[in-house]
Length: 315
Ligand code: AVJ
Image 1 (cartoon, rainbow, N blue to C red):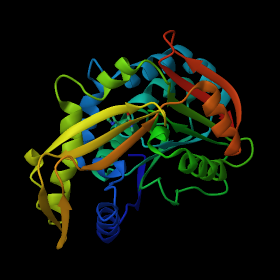
Image 2: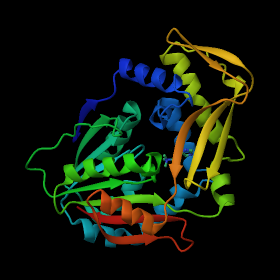
Image 3: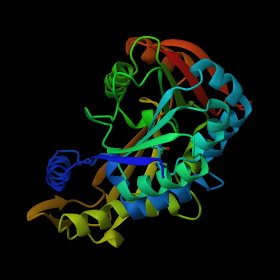
């Protein structure tokens, strides 16, 4: 099969250091990339199917409706890099129109990435697939050579919203460096909207988002010899209008001590670990951010209800 694999996954020692550093902060914090172990990646796929979680289906609707225009912008026979490819479901709606020469899915969840890359390669035998397991929130390597031109990137799902705006800018700049002058980036960005819609999307009735959040503690128990009792914490997600972001936290139900990799962390009742920010942007705000990162805005596509946007940017 036409699949190769490149592994730049963070090493266990790096994961340990980053988690311990975050838990030692006065306001405890663990980066959202650690959600995506095997069970976490599955729970995330389940979130995407929830009636309350509008971003996935809205973005797919936009890709279906405007895929032809997007392909025209990016051009044919490109080398296409997808960041945070997950199950590679969204790109499938574009592949027919886009027909890239090479597809490079990048994801932090190794097994999930491999399964998705193999199934995609089987469905599109004429595309060369190079799966790259990497943490794209820091400088990373990609299996690219000089000859791999022209280049385009796809960054769906509003995962850019997980970065602090200054970090988003630095990240987009790095993507621009991979693309080079004239390279295109197609990026999904969740829009600012009524608090009710946002609140429900991160507080679903079936409790899948809560399970996704709490799975982080189970993962730390397994991989870092943690002593978390997931039942002693609860999921909290709310919109912070001042910073225009959803915040997710794991809140301690009582005073307690927890061991992680031999270190003790003390929680008071109501104290939380901040596990995710999901920034929501107005179209103009995102244009300004893209411009600061060295991109020119060429097109924006949205759904009729203006819930979600897909931006076409040129480096
Ligand atoms: C895929 C990172 C964009 O922020 O909405 C879903 C992750 N967190 N429900 C988001 C997520 C809680 C999602 N991103």
